Image (cartoon, rainbow, N blue to C red; front, side, top):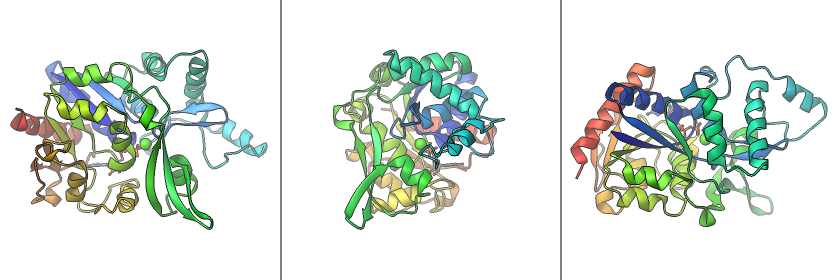
Length: 320
Ligand code: GDP
Ligand code: CA
Protein backbone atom coordinates (compact mmCIF):
# COMPACT_ATOMS: atom_id res chain seq x y z
CA UNK A 1 0.00 0.00 0.00
CA UNK A 2 1.60 3.28 -1.15
CA UNK A 3 0.07 6.41 0.36
CA UNK A 4 0.96 9.91 -0.81
CA UNK A 5 -0.06 12.84 1.41
CA UNK A 6 -0.20 16.47 0.27
CA UNK A 7 0.58 18.54 3.35
CA UNK A 8 1.50 21.80 5.05
CA UNK A 9 3.21 22.16 8.41
CA UNK A 10 1.73 21.74 11.87
CA UNK A 11 -1.72 20.31 11.02
CA UNK A 12 -0.29 18.12 8.29
CA UNK A 13 2.49 16.87 10.58
CA UNK A 14 0.01 15.73 13.21
CA UNK A 15 -2.02 13.99 10.54
CA UNK A 16 1.09 12.26 9.17
CA UNK A 17 1.74 10.67 12.57
CA UNK A 18 -1.57 8.89 12.10
CA UNK A 19 -0.81 7.95 8.50
CA UNK A 20 2.54 6.53 9.58
CA UNK A 21 0.89 4.46 12.33
CA UNK A 22 -1.72 3.17 9.87
CA UNK A 23 0.96 2.23 7.32
CA UNK A 24 3.10 0.50 9.97
CA UNK A 25 0.21 -1.79 10.92
CA UNK A 26 -0.07 -2.85 7.28
CA UNK A 27 3.46 -2.66 5.95
CA UNK A 28 2.65 0.35 3.76
CA UNK A 29 4.87 3.20 2.57
CA UNK A 30 4.13 6.88 3.06
CA UNK A 31 5.39 9.79 0.97
CA UNK A 32 4.61 13.35 2.03
CA UNK A 33 4.66 16.09 -0.61
CA UNK A 34 5.31 19.17 1.50
CA UNK A 35 4.52 22.86 0.92
CA UNK A 36 7.51 25.15 0.44
CA UNK A 37 5.54 28.39 -0.06
CA UNK A 38 6.31 29.52 3.52
CA UNK A 39 10.06 29.21 2.96
CA UNK A 40 12.17 32.30 3.37
CA UNK A 41 15.65 33.57 4.17
CA UNK A 42 16.25 35.22 7.55
CA UNK A 43 19.68 36.37 8.78
CA UNK A 44 21.18 34.62 5.78
CA UNK A 45 19.61 31.28 6.71
CA UNK A 46 17.13 29.36 4.61
CA UNK A 47 14.07 28.52 6.71
CA UNK A 48 11.57 25.84 5.61
CA UNK A 49 8.81 25.99 8.24
CA UNK A 50 6.57 23.24 6.88
CA UNK A 51 9.32 20.75 6.07
CA UNK A 52 10.78 21.32 9.53
CA UNK A 53 7.43 21.01 11.32
CA UNK A 54 6.87 17.66 9.63
CA UNK A 55 10.44 16.47 10.18
CA UNK A 56 10.55 17.42 13.87
CA UNK A 57 7.05 16.14 14.60
CA UNK A 58 7.60 12.76 12.97
CA UNK A 59 11.13 12.55 14.36
CA UNK A 60 10.01 13.18 17.95
CA UNK A 61 11.87 16.49 18.24
CA UNK A 62 9.00 18.99 18.01
CA UNK A 63 7.71 21.21 20.79
CA UNK A 64 4.23 19.82 21.33
CA UNK A 65 2.93 22.86 23.27
CA UNK A 66 4.02 25.53 20.82
CA UNK A 67 3.24 23.31 17.84
CA UNK A 68 6.32 24.44 15.89
CA UNK A 69 10.08 24.40 16.41
CA UNK A 70 12.22 22.21 18.67
CA UNK A 71 11.45 20.95 22.15
CA UNK A 72 13.77 22.15 24.98
CA UNK A 73 14.54 25.16 22.83
CA UNK A 74 16.66 28.13 23.96
CA UNK A 75 16.79 31.57 22.35
CA UNK A 76 20.30 32.94 22.94
CA UNK A 77 21.06 33.66 19.28
CA UNK A 78 17.77 35.52 18.79
CA UNK A 79 18.51 37.67 21.89
CA UNK A 80 21.99 38.46 20.59
CA UNK A 81 20.58 39.40 17.17
CA UNK A 82 18.09 41.70 18.89
CA UNK A 83 20.95 43.34 20.80
CA UNK A 84 22.52 44.20 17.43
CA UNK A 85 19.20 45.57 16.20
CA UNK A 86 19.38 42.99 13.41
CA UNK A 87 16.21 42.72 11.34
CA UNK A 88 13.87 40.95 11.08
CA UNK A 89 13.42 41.14 14.83
CA UNK A 90 9.84 39.83 14.63
CA UNK A 91 10.89 36.31 13.68
CA UNK A 92 12.25 34.24 16.57
CA UNK A 93 14.68 31.47 15.69
CA UNK A 94 15.53 28.98 18.40
CA UNK A 95 19.11 27.89 18.96
CA UNK A 96 18.48 24.22 18.21
CA UNK A 97 16.41 25.10 15.18
CA UNK A 98 19.23 27.31 13.88
CA UNK A 99 21.48 24.27 13.60
CA UNK A 100 19.02 22.80 11.08
CA UNK A 101 19.01 26.04 9.08
CA UNK A 102 22.82 26.20 9.16
CA UNK A 103 23.16 22.70 7.76
CA UNK A 104 20.49 23.41 5.14
CA UNK A 105 21.97 26.75 4.08
CA UNK A 106 25.48 25.33 3.83
CA UNK A 107 24.31 22.44 1.65
CA UNK A 108 22.20 24.70 -0.56
CA UNK A 109 25.19 27.03 -0.90
CA UNK A 110 27.31 24.07 -2.01
CA UNK A 111 24.79 23.39 -4.77
CA UNK A 112 22.62 20.61 -3.37
CA UNK A 113 18.91 20.88 -4.21
CA UNK A 114 16.40 21.24 -1.37
CA UNK A 115 15.19 17.66 -1.87
CA UNK A 116 18.70 16.29 -1.27
CA UNK A 117 19.16 18.58 1.74
CA UNK A 118 15.85 17.39 3.18
CA UNK A 119 16.91 13.78 2.78
CA UNK A 120 20.21 14.52 4.52
CA UNK A 121 18.46 16.26 7.45
CA UNK A 122 16.00 13.36 7.71
CA UNK A 123 18.89 10.91 8.13
CA UNK A 124 19.11 12.26 11.67
CA UNK A 125 15.37 12.32 12.42
CA UNK A 126 14.22 9.08 10.76
CA UNK A 127 10.68 10.39 10.26
CA UNK A 128 9.49 7.04 8.90
CA UNK A 129 7.84 8.90 6.03
CA UNK A 130 9.56 10.03 2.85
CA UNK A 131 9.55 13.85 2.82
CA UNK A 132 9.59 15.45 -0.60
CA UNK A 133 9.50 19.22 -1.10
CA UNK A 134 6.75 19.98 -3.63
CA UNK A 135 9.47 21.66 -5.70
CA UNK A 136 13.20 22.38 -5.49
CA UNK A 137 12.56 25.70 -7.20
CA UNK A 138 11.72 29.01 -5.59
CA UNK A 139 8.02 29.26 -4.86
CA UNK A 140 7.01 31.82 -2.24
CA UNK A 141 3.56 32.68 -1.00
CA UNK A 142 3.01 36.43 -0.92
CA UNK A 143 -0.04 38.16 0.48
CA UNK A 144 -1.60 41.15 -1.24
CA UNK A 145 -2.93 43.71 1.27
CA UNK A 146 -4.28 47.25 1.06
CA UNK A 147 -1.92 50.09 1.87
CA UNK A 148 -2.03 53.88 1.63
CA UNK A 149 -0.47 53.77 -1.83
CA UNK A 150 -2.86 51.10 -3.10
CA UNK A 151 -2.12 47.42 -2.78
CA UNK A 152 1.19 45.90 -1.79
CA UNK A 153 2.45 42.33 -1.44
CA UNK A 154 4.39 40.97 1.49
CA UNK A 155 5.86 37.56 2.22
CA UNK A 156 3.44 35.19 3.92
CA UNK A 157 5.67 34.99 7.03
CA UNK A 158 5.67 38.77 7.39
CA UNK A 159 1.88 38.84 7.07
CA UNK A 160 1.36 36.02 9.55
CA UNK A 161 4.16 36.39 12.09
CA UNK A 162 4.89 40.12 12.03
CA UNK A 163 1.34 41.37 11.47
CA UNK A 164 -0.35 38.34 13.11
CA UNK A 165 -2.56 37.99 10.05
CA UNK A 166 -4.35 41.22 11.04
CA UNK A 167 -3.96 43.01 7.69
CA UNK A 168 -6.94 41.89 5.61
CA UNK A 169 -5.61 39.71 2.80
CA UNK A 170 -6.94 40.50 -0.68
CA UNK A 171 -5.30 37.56 -2.40
CA UNK A 172 -2.39 35.16 -2.30
CA UNK A 173 0.26 34.93 -4.99
CA UNK A 174 2.63 32.01 -5.40
CA UNK A 175 5.69 33.83 -6.68
CA UNK A 176 7.78 31.68 -9.00
CA UNK A 177 5.15 28.97 -9.38
CA UNK A 178 4.85 29.29 -13.17
CA UNK A 179 8.46 28.32 -13.71
CA UNK A 180 8.71 25.71 -10.93
CA UNK A 181 8.82 21.95 -11.56
CA UNK A 182 7.77 19.16 -9.22
CA UNK A 183 10.66 18.06 -6.98
CA UNK A 184 12.50 14.81 -7.75
CA UNK A 185 10.33 11.80 -6.96
CA UNK A 186 7.06 13.72 -6.67
CA UNK A 187 5.51 12.71 -10.00
CA UNK A 188 6.84 9.16 -9.61
CA UNK A 189 5.30 8.87 -6.14
CA UNK A 190 1.95 10.13 -7.44
CA UNK A 191 2.05 7.74 -10.40
CA UNK A 192 2.74 4.78 -8.10
CA UNK A 193 0.29 5.81 -5.37
CA UNK A 194 -2.54 3.53 -4.27
CA UNK A 195 -4.19 6.40 -2.40
CA UNK A 196 -3.62 10.18 -2.32
CA UNK A 197 -4.67 11.94 0.89
CA UNK A 198 -5.02 15.71 1.20
CA UNK A 199 -4.09 16.44 4.85
CA UNK A 200 -6.33 18.70 6.97
CA UNK A 201 -3.90 21.51 6.20
CA UNK A 202 -4.68 25.09 5.29
CA UNK A 203 -6.26 24.81 1.81
CA UNK A 204 -5.20 28.31 0.74
CA UNK A 205 -1.60 28.67 1.93
CA UNK A 206 -0.51 25.05 2.45
CA UNK A 207 -2.25 22.89 -0.17
CA UNK A 208 -2.83 25.46 -2.95
CA UNK A 209 0.91 26.29 -3.31
CA UNK A 210 1.67 22.55 -3.63
CA UNK A 211 -0.95 22.22 -6.36
CA UNK A 212 0.33 25.42 -8.04
CA UNK A 213 3.53 23.65 -9.14
CA UNK A 214 2.87 23.04 -12.84
CA UNK A 215 2.12 19.38 -13.52
CA UNK A 216 1.46 18.45 -9.91
CA UNK A 217 -2.30 18.96 -9.81
CA UNK A 218 -2.58 17.23 -13.20
CA UNK A 219 -0.63 14.24 -11.86
CA UNK A 220 -3.02 13.92 -8.91
CA UNK A 221 -6.17 14.37 -10.97
CA UNK A 222 -5.16 12.13 -13.88
CA UNK A 223 -3.71 9.37 -11.66
CA UNK A 224 -5.50 6.10 -10.98
CA UNK A 225 -5.35 6.49 -7.18
CA UNK A 226 -8.45 7.72 -5.33
CA UNK A 227 -7.99 11.17 -3.79
CA UNK A 228 -9.47 11.77 -0.34
CA UNK A 229 -9.33 15.06 1.57
CA UNK A 230 -9.76 15.56 5.32
CA UNK A 231 -11.51 18.77 6.33
CA UNK A 232 -9.37 21.28 8.25
CA UNK A 233 -12.55 23.12 9.22
CA UNK A 234 -14.76 21.79 12.00
CA UNK A 235 -18.14 23.36 12.66
CA UNK A 236 -17.17 26.53 10.77
CA UNK A 237 -13.94 27.06 12.72
CA UNK A 238 -10.36 26.48 11.57
CA UNK A 239 -9.49 24.66 14.87
CA UNK A 240 -6.17 26.50 15.02
CA UNK A 241 -4.37 28.81 12.61
CA UNK A 242 -5.47 31.32 10.00
CA UNK A 243 -7.55 29.32 7.52
CA UNK A 244 -10.61 31.53 8.21
CA UNK A 245 -8.72 34.68 7.18
CA UNK A 246 -7.26 32.97 4.12
CA UNK A 247 -10.61 31.62 2.96
CA UNK A 248 -12.21 35.06 3.44
CA UNK A 249 -9.69 36.53 0.97
CA UNK A 250 -10.97 34.05 -1.63
CA UNK A 251 -14.62 34.69 -0.73
CA UNK A 252 -14.93 31.07 0.32
CA UNK A 253 -17.10 30.32 3.34
CA UNK A 254 -15.11 28.99 6.31
CA UNK A 255 -16.88 25.63 6.48
CA UNK A 256 -16.34 22.00 5.49
CA UNK A 257 -18.69 22.63 2.55
CA UNK A 258 -16.82 25.79 1.52
CA UNK A 259 -13.48 23.98 1.38
CA UNK A 260 -15.04 21.04 -0.49
CA UNK A 261 -16.27 23.53 -3.07
CA UNK A 262 -12.83 25.10 -3.30
CA UNK A 263 -11.11 21.74 -3.96
CA UNK A 264 -13.95 20.50 -6.12
CA UNK A 265 -15.12 16.96 -6.81
CA UNK A 266 -13.08 14.95 -9.29
CA UNK A 267 -16.36 13.93 -10.91
CA UNK A 268 -16.89 17.63 -11.71
CA UNK A 269 -13.38 18.54 -12.88
CA UNK A 270 -11.97 19.11 -9.38
CA UNK A 271 -9.48 17.36 -7.12
CA UNK A 272 -11.28 15.04 -4.72
CA UNK A 273 -13.09 11.71 -4.93
CA UNK A 274 -13.85 11.71 -1.21
CA UNK A 275 -14.19 14.35 1.51
CA UNK A 276 -14.08 13.46 5.19
CA UNK A 277 -15.85 15.93 7.46
CA UNK A 278 -16.36 16.06 11.21
CA UNK A 279 -19.53 14.68 12.79
CA UNK A 280 -20.46 18.30 13.54
CA UNK A 281 -20.62 18.90 9.78
CA UNK A 282 -22.76 15.88 8.92
CA UNK A 283 -25.03 16.54 5.97
CA UNK A 284 -22.48 18.47 3.89
CA UNK A 285 -23.05 17.77 0.22
CA UNK A 286 -20.66 18.57 -2.62
CA UNK A 287 -20.79 17.91 -6.34
CA UNK A 288 -18.75 15.10 -7.85
CA UNK A 289 -17.43 13.56 -4.64
CA UNK A 290 -18.48 11.29 -1.80
CA UNK A 291 -18.73 12.76 1.73
CA UNK A 292 -18.35 10.78 4.96
CA UNK A 293 -18.26 12.00 8.52
CA UNK A 294 -16.19 10.98 11.55
CA UNK A 295 -14.69 12.75 14.58
CA UNK A 296 -11.85 14.86 13.10
CA UNK A 297 -10.16 16.26 16.22
CA UNK A 298 -6.53 15.11 16.17
CA UNK A 299 -6.35 15.08 19.97
CA UNK A 300 -3.77 12.27 20.16
CA UNK A 301 -2.15 9.67 17.91
CA UNK A 302 -4.93 7.14 18.49
CA UNK A 303 -7.62 9.63 17.44
CA UNK A 304 -5.57 10.66 14.40
CA UNK A 305 -4.97 7.05 13.35
CA UNK A 306 -8.73 6.45 13.57
CA UNK A 307 -9.25 9.42 11.21
CA UNK A 308 -6.77 7.90 8.77
CA UNK A 309 -8.51 4.52 8.95
CA UNK A 310 -11.82 6.14 8.01
CA UNK A 311 -10.16 8.14 5.22
CA UNK A 312 -8.68 4.91 3.83
CA UNK A 313 -12.09 3.21 3.98
CA UNK A 314 -13.52 6.15 2.07
CA UNK A 315 -10.69 5.79 -0.48
CA UNK A 316 -11.67 2.13 -0.88
CA UNK A 317 -15.29 3.11 -1.44
CA UNK A 318 -14.47 5.63 -4.18
CA UNK A 319 -11.69 3.63 -5.91
CA UNK A 320 -12.40 3.12 -9.59
P1 GDP B 1 0.75 25.10 9.04
O1 GDP B 1 1.49 25.02 7.73
O2 GDP B 1 1.65 25.00 10.21
O3 GDP B 1 -0.23 26.23 9.09
O4 GDP B 1 -0.09 23.76 9.13
P2 GDP B 1 -1.13 23.10 8.15
O5 GDP B 1 -1.51 23.99 7.03
O6 GDP B 1 -0.63 21.74 7.81
O7 GDP B 1 -2.36 22.90 9.10
C1 GDP B 1 -3.06 23.99 9.65
C2 GDP B 1 -4.53 23.65 9.64
O8 GDP B 1 -4.76 22.43 10.35
C3 GDP B 1 -5.37 24.67 10.38
O9 GDP B 1 -5.79 25.67 9.46
C4 GDP B 1 -6.54 23.86 10.92
O10 GDP B 1 -7.66 24.11 10.11
C5 GDP B 1 -6.10 22.40 10.76
N1 GDP B 1 -6.15 21.65 12.01
C6 GDP B 1 -5.40 21.83 13.12
N2 GDP B 1 -5.73 20.93 14.08
C7 GDP B 1 -6.72 20.15 13.54
C8 GDP B 1 -7.49 19.04 14.04
O11 GDP B 1 -7.33 18.57 15.18
N3 GDP B 1 -8.41 18.51 13.19
C9 GDP B 1 -8.63 19.00 11.93
N4 GDP B 1 -9.56 18.41 11.16
N5 GDP B 1 -7.92 20.04 11.44
C10 GDP B 1 -6.99 20.60 12.23
CA1 CA C 1 2.92 26.48 6.83
